[in-house]
Image 1 (tube, rainbow over the protein chains, first blue to last red):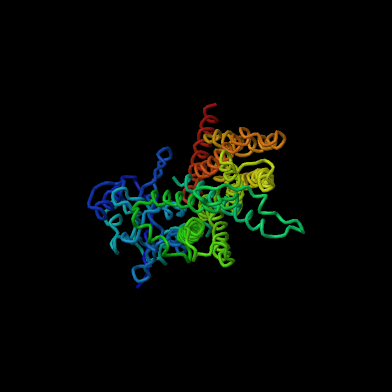
Image 2: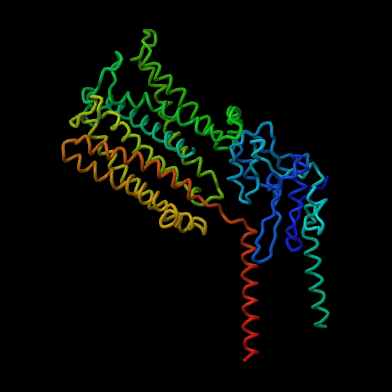
Length: 161
Length: 330
C-alpha cells in the first residue's frame, strides 16, 4: 500500500480552526480545541495561518526518547507514529524532544496524545472547507507545486519565442 | 520538581562518591604516606561507630531515594512509573531509571550492612568491596545522568551539550563534599585538624574554581551555537533570570563559598564561616539547576523561519511601495 501523508497548504488556510474542533470531537468526544491533535499557529500581524500536525518523521525523536515504547511506529498502518495510551506514563519527554512542538499533554486523560491520521480517514482533511489540508500519497506531495512551476516556465519560454 | 530531583540526586551521588573516595583513600598508600584511619574523625551513634567516610556513604543513597520520587510526582499517571524502564535501547529516561534503581538498591544494601547487627553479614569482609565498587560506578552515573537527562533534548540548544553533564558532575561533587563538611558540624565529627577534612576543604575550593571555568565555557559555547542558545544565555545573564544566575549561582554558588572557605582556613576552622559558606554553596547548587532548567528555549521550527522570511519580504515590499508612492507625490 502506498504511504500517505498530511500535506498543508498554508496559503489556503483561513485560520477558522474547524480542523481543531473536529479533531477533538473525533478523538475525545468533546468539542474542545485545546484537546485537539492539530493546532493552527497564527501570525495575525501578517495574516498567516499554519495548521501544525504531526509530521510522522522518518527519524522520530519522540519514538527515540519514549522510555516505555508507548510512542512507536506502525509500519503496517501507513507507517504512522502513534502513542499507546495504555503504556504512556505522561512523562512529557516526547513533547520536549519534538522540534515541531507536536505531541500534546491531555490534561483530562493525563497522558500525551498525538495525531494518528484518525485511523486512515483524517477528520481535518474531511472537514476543511478550503482544502488547505490534504491526505495524499507521500511521493506526490509536491506535484501541485511542480506543475505550477513548470506552467510558469512554459509561459516564460513562450514569451521568449 | 525536576530541579529538586536534579539537586538531591546530584548532591547525594556526589557525597557518596566523595565518601567512597575518602574510604578508599584511607586504605591505599599514597606514595608511601598512608592516610591513617585515625585521621578520619569518628563518632558513636546508637551503638555504631561512624567515621567521616561512612556518613555520606549511608546518606547518599537515601538522598537520591528521596529525590527520585520527585521525578515520579512529575508524571501524568504516577503509578505507571514502573513502565519507565521498557526502552533502555534509545531512551535516556529509561536508562536513568535503571541507573538510579541500581544505585539506590546497592546503596541501601551497604546501609543495611553497616546498620544491621548480624554476625553472618561479615561487615569487614573484603567481598563487600564489590557492591561498593558497583555503587561507586552507579553513583558517578547518577551524578552525570542528571546532566545527560537534559542533554538528551536535542531541540533545546542550551541543554544539548557535553559540558552540561560535566557542569552538573562538578557541581554534584562540590555540593556533595560541602554537604559532608556541613553534616560534621555540630556532631563532634568536625575538627579542623583532621587531615581528611582539610583535604575536603581544599577539594571544595578546587571544585568551585573548576565549576566556574566549566560554567564560563558552557555559557560562552551556548551563546555562539544558535539564535535560541544566545537567547537562553541572555535570559540568564541580563534577562528575567539574572537574579537566579548572578545572585544565586555566581554569588551564592561560586564566589561566597570560595571566599568564606579561604577565610575559614586562616581562622582555624571558624564554624560560623564554614556553616554559612556551606549553606550558600548548597543554595547555589540548587539555583544553578533551576536557572539552567528555566532558561531552556526550544529551537525555532523550520516553518517559523519561513514565516519570518515571508514577513520580512512583505515588509520590504510595503516599504518599497511606500517609498515609490512618496517619490511620485513629490
